[in-house]
Image (tube, rainbow, N blue to C red; front, side, top):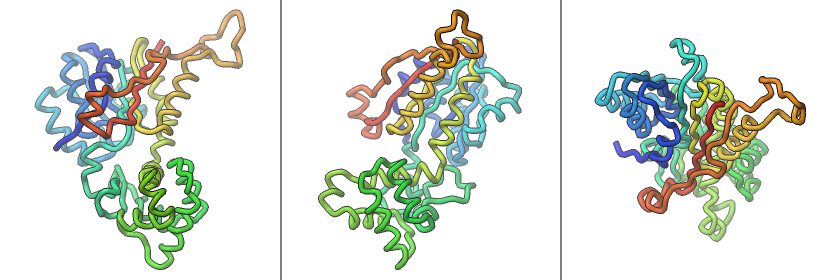
Length: 306
């Protein structure tokens, strides 16, 4: 199965891996990053999370060819802290989040891509009930409008939401092409081909189906609390909404709490928990951009636990 891990070398370097360390791959996918981590730990252990059962099964076979020093956990990374605690782990040396949809998921028949006609699904975890079909066919006009604007940052959210509601009253949406065609009809051919609003709309629906941003906001402070002193947290994002959350949380956690700023002695609980390793995000090289067009929006940020 072909999979390309974006900013892989930069992410692995950012983790500053020790061969006896404990590491977490919060977004296992198809083991692109996990393979690199596992090859570098001789006496340590890798814990990896994914809510996609197919990714777990595939990665199990790939990783056991390298080492047995890994544990794969079929859960959303939002449950990371409790899952590690159940396994007797309360501190680790590094955590990696490689966010977004993996190449195999985009290439499977799950409705993530508007380039092929597929069932409107978009679930990363097939155990969950909510699908893209449910969102498109059951959300109110107001809910769709707000969703497209908030998670898709789409200027013509109102027009698109209105057209979807009109069309589904005639016939419920079943496939990606049906949705794509209605987006085009709502905004007109010129705007459609000039700006490609379908990218924004599909992104918004995928985020909603999988609770991606809410989970990220929840897990990042918990991930920081799991790090040992000098432990590293590395996050790769693929759109501005994700990156904004990461940037804001990293900034907040790296500064003195405003409530006590200026006091001669800052109580420990109000002191920064981390230091930022790279002030500006690391971006893909021109070589990587040539090799993989999906990497063009990627940004990598690194912090270290104080």
